[in-house]
Image (cartoon, rainbow, N blue to C red; front, side, top):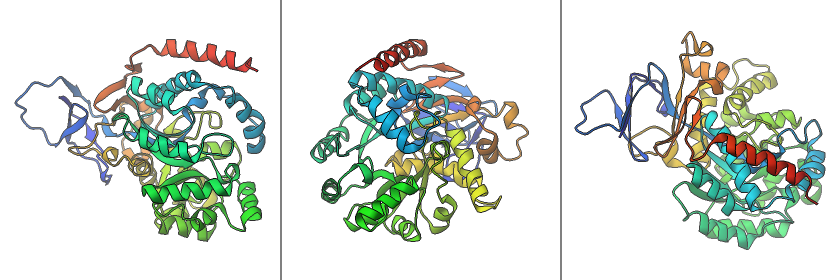
Length: 424
């Protein structure tokens, strides 16, 4: 049993309310939340928070973790050229070992940012899952079907396999995007979704040209197309959702489709600003993702939260748009819901002990006028004092506890990256 005491708690079971309750962790679960009380047994560890904040970990609701090897490799070019001329050719050189090693690097970065789970769309899922299991990190794999890699039968096999694989691993149906997936495959995925009664996730309406191309091909926006073939009968989610019509937004609302926004990547690639404030107004559930490190380039939830709110204020010419409280909920509570991690959404008895400690005793958190606004508007990775997943402390005071040294991972990743550049 681990005890967190003498601090503040944002449990998120009722918004961003803050209390002075203690939190006890037993194994991988939350065992007690409330005022101090007597305990008959012996605590494994008692952590004096010294006034710091405990809250649920952030959920990175859209990313491509193994793409760490492409960080700062193909910057300052438009999305279409970036993807087809730079990224796809390099990704074609990857094997399972590459995915395994590059994923480990991403996990280190997630831990420093208070991210306790990722929603990852990539290939070689066995190697990817193994990296997460070895380091103790929670992840949801997302199908990545397209016309040149993966298939619908394999998607079904992965769904059945990885949803019964390991407590830290789960799987959602998904495909890359409309423009990389033909209509026959899209219809097959929709049929599989209905057969399994499972939601589907995909890149959606990320750029203006993507939407215009879909309209030219089918006379519908991507969202309208997916809905017309029964893709969203069991919900799911769209990543990016920058160019959304009123009808698109109504479909998301009516079919309970999660919108996962990626402001860092969309800004850097000049894709545009998603209509998040409009989504919130319409009752659409919004989560936040970093996207991959090839396009962002950081895996930093603090930067994403800041961009979500300030870009809405700028786009709407309204300083009151997208308030900090809503953004913080997107990053932690709604992100968990979008990923199907209902037992990781808040700090309550019986929930998974996926939590973080935010250091309030840093200059950027003082004075404490409003903790929630401090986290979103002035917070940074410097404030992540601890990251715990499934009851295990994986990062604390700048040190990693993931079974191997960070420097060893860095060395392997750098060597492997240079090797890949020379592969034919």
